[in-house]
Amino acid sequence: MAEVWISLKDIPADGREFSFSDQPTWETYWREFRLPVKSGKPLEATFTVYPQKGGVLVRGRLNGSVILECSRCTGDVEHVVDLPFELYEEAGGNAAGEQSQLLRRERDHLELNPAEMLWEEFSLNLPVKLLCSKYCKGLCPTCGKNLNQEECACSSDEGDPRLAALRGFKLTKKD
Image (tube, rainbow, N blue to C red; front, side, top):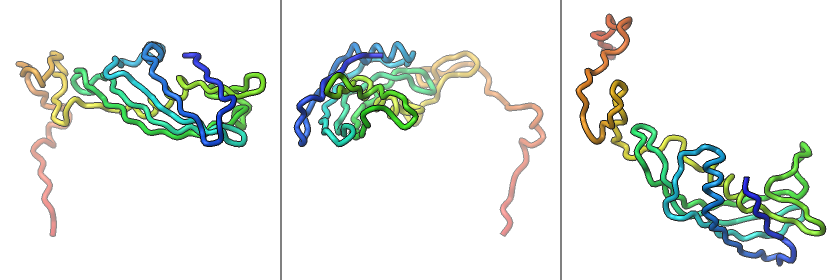
């Protein structure tokens, strides 16, 4: 995990703005979590940190794009990231006594790990299934050809032979 800490010492009550655009950090996370992600438009974040009693409030936006795989045909798809976020992190960990990975106390002040914070926001907002098009035909289950690019000569599957007796079955609606 990336270890980038910024000091929150001397931040005014009306907050201070920060920016984060470290592309190698993103690539480190993608490798570490074995995500099939490639860089598109560089990911950049701007956020404002507001000191709060007992913690810190962060408001910002993450912008850029990444290249992901289509869930059907495995082709490349550009996914635009335009993510507003807001989070409150309590100093000293959570109720279970676990230390926060976003905020730590260093001598007489708090430090924030922006890389970890942005990774959390990014990963929670990745699409579950991304399609290159709503009309994507996917891959042929027999030969593996991308059916968006070419037709294949494989025969169409007739389905489960145990259900053959039901193929001609028609339901009619009763009034």
